[in-house]
Amino acid sequence: MSTPGDAPSRVHVGGADPYDVVIGTGVLGELPGLVGQGVRTVALVHDRSLPEIARPAAEALEQAGYRVEALPVPAGEAAKEAGVLAGLWSRFAELGMTRSDAIVGVGGGATTDLAGFAAASWLRGVRSVLVPTTLLGMVDAAVGGKTGINIPEGKNLVGAFHPPAGVLCDLGTLRTMPHEDYISGLAEIVKAGFIADPAILDLVEDDPRGAASPAGPHTRELVERAVRVKAEVVSADLKEAGLREILNYGHTLAHAIEKAEDYRFRHGHAVAIGMVYAAELAALTGRLGADVVERHRSVLASTGLPTSYGARDWPALRATMTIDKKSRGSLLRFVVLDGLAEPGRLEGPGEDLLEAAYRKVAG
Image (cartoon, rainbow, N blue to C red; front, side, top):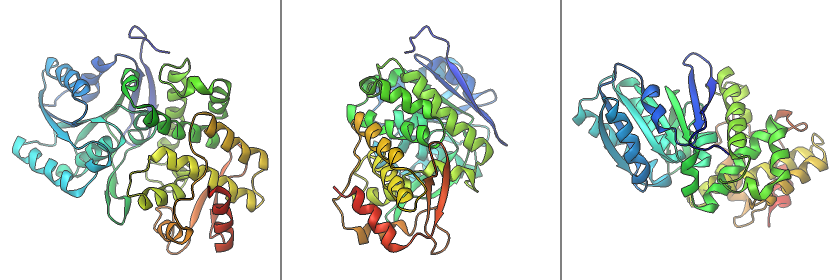
């Protein structure tokens, strides 16, 4: 586990607009370097429930000579609404923000999604730096340039691809997270293990209790490995033209569950169930062995993540899956596994097959 004296790690994200993800403990001093030179005003968009993190971030920027304006937004998914975004646009106008200014987003995945979309849409694109404060934000939402907000019809249906100028992951902020929220973030780390880096699964299986705690001995390695998986994928495919779809493993059912629960269901919990569903779907088609399906259940359950869901009728969930971002017209498409770290696609599975797989996860 990293200590304040440890040198931060840097994971490079390539592509047309490359940037670094800085990972360590006590690393807010790296923030001005990510914002860069030539910036006059920094709009600090932050989760209003995190003043103890937003304040030192603002101070680090002010000490570096930036004019900083703190713009608090609602906590959680309540931030990802059109009205909140429009309010930020108005504040940017009042501040006279130009294309040479920058936006810094501090908070969980919802806050960084919102801040990133605000940066993508203001003056058709300004510089942004993201400071995720949750495990889910560090290993998923803040890395990769996906930004967006929710609408009543679905999650993340309005957004843009807008790579940040940098991402700063201060592992010290994880110590303040509610336990269930931390566990939720583990689902995206486990996902990275199944689709690309099985060493992640070994680390979790060797010490599930440690994996479920930010004070665990392998926290930094788990975060770094998950970030590297995502960095490698998005470097090759920013706009989800092909390869990047593998990062949506488990998300087709997960997003349907979240919508059915009015977004009060933790994202990672939904993804955990969605991964088991995708594994069962692959097994029913003969593409995945029963041992890998069982490993999904055992690894996820060992950390406290759910592996079943039966709170909603299948027809409603099935209808929501139709508008999944991976769909092409009326053709429903899934990311599945053909083996450990061997992701593939399943297109247009039959309705009986879809329902049979759901029965396997209906608790």
